[in-house]
Structures are given as structure tokens and as C-alpha cells.
Image (cartoon, rainbow, N blue to C red; front, side, top):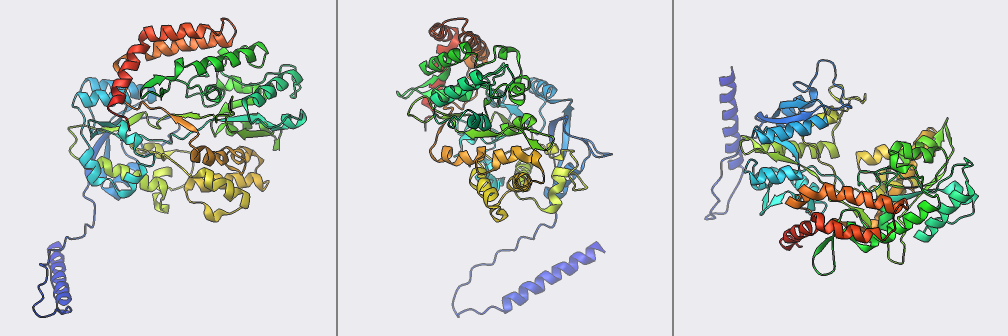
Length: 553
């Protein structure tokens, strides 16, 4: 039966070609190009098998009868793009995942592709264990994928490039994640204080919040800070943005004006910022117990009306909502402001590169093109899915039920830039859905409008993020005026960096804390600088500049 059908198809094709040829007339003597044989349209993707490794996640909940071995997301990849996924192993959690990746590398027992950190990317490249994917990426990545991974000017791809060879796919995210200043605006009104435009304004506000106790608690402070304030992962109750106000930065490699890179931790501007913090501490504007409080404990000062100032990223309102909204009522009013500057120069918000992990392909992989297919499909589905492709987010029933099936996609990359700041404040202010472009736009708009319309006061936090005076509304000006500073070093950790970085950070925090808490003179910073250099800082700086000499743009 199949043979008969195939014969009929061939006959039909021949007749079609004959009729087409007869229907064309040519000028006598005009030479026609030789007709090339037509390539048959592929009716179904040939299935190729690609192995990886995965980590279980507390937020991933499988539908009944499904698991990492067999699930609707893996089935969808096989059906839609012809890539059959298998796991070489699955870890219990992310911590175990990282340990098992180390073991896989040590034993040279790699799956076809997996996610590694920057140091491992370099090690695997030097050990010749992973594939140069320059050609396979160039041939198989779609135009959309290439554009998507180059929105930052190609910086993230450069971090994965060694001697002109692309050795990994950046597990990218948006590097333009700015920090902002959040202040209790109801207290500003109560005390008849202006909104903060300068660092002097902010210090005046912090002192007024302490001395006049607008929260009426009897235990007032100015600013909420937690125990690890100089860690970039401390996205709320941290002090990196405070440093930025003084043109100081946390562990960032920056140009010195002479064509070389220097580390920000030992620059004189840090001393100025520490001196200001010391003065605030002496005045009681900083909780003396901050050194033992994690983020949530420190944030209680905000919830309980003991402090009215905090630095943090755009999503901070979601944290503030725990104290600001109760029993269907807004009890606290907060405003979000750009980082103020200590002088006439604008404060630059410190940002990273937006990548610290990479997907690498083993040299033994038989179908590296399958990995690029996964990359293409993730970008396509994540940015403009069809209704049927909700399977990648929700599972086979295509319904949101909190199972986070998107975590099953083994290769995920995020947008390096978004236009939330241009779109959302305008859409929400004008109640104009027509200008919304992305899934994220629509989700945030819907939440914010529930607050605007009064149907869900609990969505107050989204309005403070996405509304006309929200955090996103401040982004376009920062972006357009380039009021940010990005790390100039984007290579894998140097030998001294890998060996001494954590020791240097620990020593730094110890000295910073002692100065802040008025346990030592601010001049102790100068001694720290000399010690930093001797403990490996000078050697690290030398290695970084050797790298920079060959990577300057």
C-alpha cells in the first residue's frame, strides 16, 4: 500500500513539473538556466537524541505519571523539533547538581551538553573536552536567536569566546538590572521634607526619620541594612547602591584613566562612602544589630515602621508589600527614586555582565545541532508562544496550576534587554493595552490595573514597579544617559583570582564593617589597601591587565 502511494506521488510530481514547463514560453535563442532538482519538503523532523543533566527543583511539581524520564515537555520537544531528550543523571537539588558537575568533569564523563560556570568553561576548553561551536552555531542558530543573544552588543558571547572560538552558549539574563532608592513618602509629607535629589537630601531625611520617629515606634532608624550588604546578590537591604552614590563600586574592574584596569574595592571613593556610613552609625541611623540580621529580618524594620529608607532592585516593592498592604488597605506609601549623587556628577549604577553560567557541548556529542535547535525553540516559545506551546510552561493540560513546567526545559536563556520602562508606565497611565508587546508586559499590566481599578489592592507592589512613577519608569533615562558602570573584565577568573579572591573579600568586609561600626578609624582603609595588594591583589591586577591588553575594544 505504501509502495503504491509512493508511485502515485512520483507520477503526480512529474505531471506537475511537465505542466509547469509547458506553461512557460521563451524568446527564441534565449538560453535558459539549467533547472535544479527540487528538494522535497521535509514532512517530519528526523528525531535525534541529545543527552544532558538536570537538577530537581522545589518549585517543579510533576503531573501524575510524569518524571524527568518521561514528561510532556520532553515529548513536546521531540514532536516539535525532533530532539529526544535524555538525562545522564538528575540531582536532588542545585547544590548537589554543582557537585555532580564537578565529578562529571573530573571523570571526563560528560553528557552531550550541560551547564557550567565560567571557571569550568575555561578548564573544559583548555582540557579540549568541549566542542568549538562557532560553525554549528553559525549554521544552525536562527536569525532571531543570533539577534537575541547579541542585544548587549555581543558582550556575553565574548565571555564564552577563547582565541576566536565560541566554546559555550551564555545562560544569559538582563545585565541592566539597576538599583534604586526607596523612601517612605508618607513620612516625607508628615515631616514636610522634599523628595531626595542629592546625597545631602538623603542624609537629612535619614536623620529626620531617626530623630522625629514618624512611625511612632520608639525604636526608629533611618535605613534598613542586612548582614551581607556588599554582596551583589543582596538585592534589597544592601549597600552597593550607597557606594555608587559616592562613585565607589563593589569588586568591579574599572579603567584608571591610563589604559589599565584597577579594582574598585581599594579606590579612595570607597573611603568617602565608609566615612559617611560611620557617621550614620554613630547617629543611630543604622540598626547596630544589622550584622546578625538576614534580609528578611532586616526588612522587618520596614514592615514595622522602624525605618523608611532602603536600597534595592526594581522588584523591591514586592518585598515592601508585606508591611505596606494589610487587610485590603495600603498602610504605607513608598516612592522610588534614582540613586542620588554626593556631588554634581550623576551616580552610576553598578551592573554586571548578565552571565555567569554557560551551556557547553561535549566533543563526543554526535548531534551538536540538536542543542542549537533547543536554543532556537526556547527563544521562539518563550517570546511569542502559540496556544499549543503552553505545554512548555504548564504541561499537557495547558493550564496554569503552579507546577512550573518551564523548569524542565534543559536550555534556557533570558533577554539581555527589555523595554518595560518605555512601555508599561505609559500603558498603565493611559489604560492602553494596545501598546503592550510581550507576555511580561501583559502580565504586569493586568496586575497593575487590578490595583488601579480597586479590584485587588494587594497588587499595589506591581503598580510601584510598573506604574507611571514606578521603578521601571526610571530606567529609560538611566539607559539613555548611560548612567551605569559595567565591569570591564569579562574573562574567566585568573589563577590568583581563583585562589585569593574569597580571602580578599573576607578581609575587605571585615575592615569595611569595623569602619562602619566605628570600631576603628576610617584611616584603617589605607592599611587595608596595602594589605590587599600584598595578599594577592597586585598579582591579580597584573593578570587582569595582561588579559585586558588583548581584549580592549
